[in-house]
Image (tube, rainbow, N blue to C red; front, side, top):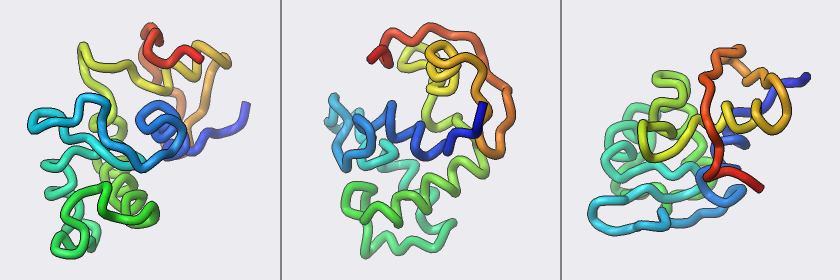
Length: 123
């Protein structure tokens, strides 16, 4: 089986296949947004680390795709999928791909998949 680009997979499960959209519960407590559903606090933390000017792009949705992908790449490189998975809110998208397609190799991450149900991600 071939490799899956982690950014395409994140967009598939986080932003309806790659749309620049707010979180479905977008309010002061749920600020995930953009192609990669990056929260405002995470954006403010990672953007300067990867050279993004917060004055020009104060939130993920205000940034073009390439800038959002740069931030997502910084997150993924430093923390793996940590920013896109949590107990009780969603399952690891790699688990869902494995459940749908068999064992999946993710570029740069190998096969370290956790078992999990994928109700949220069923097509």
